[in-house]
Image 1 (cartoon, rainbow, N blue to C red):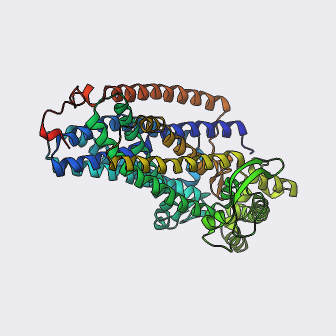
Image 2: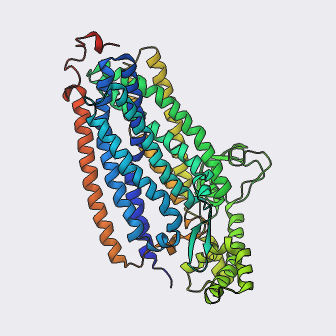
Image 3: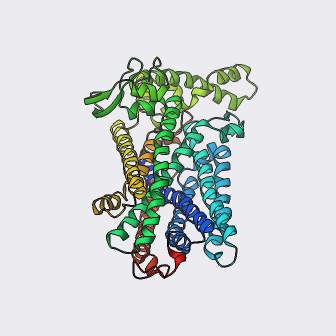
Length: 523
């Protein structure tokens, strides 16, 4: 049965919208949690009341963001059952385990620690409360870890094998799933991006207070912490992002070639295209500005190993599709006679390519009847949207480099006690949206670049969708858009309201910016 492309497209659109919206909150939760832990640690060590008030105020904004992250995450996960039923059936044994662990951590561990954070100020000692805040910061990162383990398996499916009797992927080594090298690189890169977002959030809002002459002592301390933490996080994002890129070049060669708009394999070491205009029809990149050797060094860690171009990878896909058809045929034989020795041997020899044969299901019912033209069409479908990946990656990298410059400059000004410069404060304020831009583009590079695969090399996205009508998906898509729009309005209203009120408006700080009545409130 050929899958309805409208259902697949609408289901992808629905999941993309909900995932992108959910990802607005997750990185900020990661970053703010550690900022709170740092501020409260200073309070416990110095007993200066200002640091306690800082922790409480930024904790209010953290709480709003955390609640929205939970609300959007729960509804998003339901789509695996509603819109991607066959995907859930096919890989649920592997994908479901880390998701379940993440769910338990998010709802039980994180939920408990969040409650202790907000209601434990006067009920437990400052030291114990500080430990709660640190455990909360660690719990948010551990929760992200399990999600990224699940996601990394979709990018690099290790520790699993296909069972022709159950027609499902099954775990062969949960240890390999957990210690997937792609999961490790994605985790450290993602949490570092979250730390950068949290630091920028604090830096920008503090800059807004200083521009208006409010909460000056409070804002300067907050900016100093944000500048220090943000500089370390921004540097980590670049370094760890390079490691993540290396993992892509090892496991997802087509994604890497598309990011570079590398149509043909270049002599090693490959150059990095700083700027260009990818032309999909002509299969070339116009007005390309290239930096020699850089891509080869980043992608292969060598000077003699090439990065394959799109044309060569399409040819490789054609070979794998042909081999996969043999595995598909053997799988059908084994379903009829599970003791057929010849079919077992053929499947064992070609089972790693069966997913490529399934690419033909998008165009025909029986891959075994594919003509050379059909195989070519299926091989061409392995090319993701090159211009989108090319520009998404470069804008993301530009944002990352800007964060290093801004936090470095902020750190220098903080060390000189010169945070009052209005031009600097305006730039810091205007930079507030950029971490979200970078995070969303990073998600697009990682997920959109994986197409046409739901599970890289194993299950095409077109086969993972539920048996729904396009009308049914339109209804659920409309419902999600309305629900998430309502949440966006509520979240924006609450964040702006409490940020505008500030610590003085919430009774956490003196109304007059320079009125510091006690020694305990001074630096």
